[in-house]
Image (cartoon, rainbow, N blue to C red; front, side, top):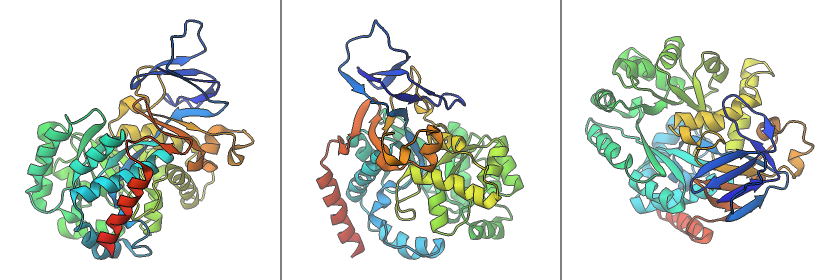
Length: 423
């Protein structure tokens, strides 16, 4: 059992963003107590003096392609279609399960040092991805990225049956890469499968104007309207990016209670556009944040995503009050957790999973302390994260990683793979 004391606690339960001086106790993988110091305290295995620092729920990365770390800063400064089809896809064809395993581990290190304890991961060789996360002790939601022909439906069903029972740290979401990489019969089959299993479905959706225009040319509908017509969204799920949703699309997202996962850094870097998050929030649509992959971002850093999410809304709305810090912090924590189906990891409360981080408030960028929540979004950076706990285990603390493998070995494997694939 672990006790956190002598610090500040941001529980983020419900709509609250108050800071308290509570103690937090963790037993096994769960939080068992949040409150004042008690005289009947049990015997703790470790007592962590926070020394005035902040304990808060971890960030959840609701959209990523972890093993794309091998393409970090490799194919930059290109428009999305050229970047994806001419530079990314040809190199991804050279990936193997072993390569994805090692590259995913390198992403886990970056997640942990950024205060991220879970990622919704859509990539090749999901078994290798899942195993890398299990071996590191990291939480993951495997989201299928099938494309091509209707044969992909069989793969989706196999994955559903496999990953939903694999490990407590692994969960699964049905998904497909995008409308433009899937044949019609595959999309139709995904809708039928989602109905059979009552499963939510996620996909890249309306990331660029060109994507929407080409879908309209093929089907006379936007991607969202096509998915709705095929019953893909009947049981929930949502879209990654969602930069270009029209009014009918937004109504579908409202009615189906779908989630929008925004990736502002990737969208900005690829000049895809700025998702109108204020418009979506006004309609009551649930919002989460993701980094996308390191090939298009190029950092797996939720602090940067939060900052961009708010300042780009202020700029595009010409309103400095748009998308306040409190809203964005919720997106990065509970909003993303709910999109990922991780409702037991969304806040600090008794019975919730112990996915926690400690943020150092005693650094120049966090002083003076006028408003901690505003500071987290507008001023903080990943260097302020001094501890990351996943499922009750401390995996990162004061610059050291505890992931069952040495950092040097993880880096060496990643660089070896880059030489094999990219040279």
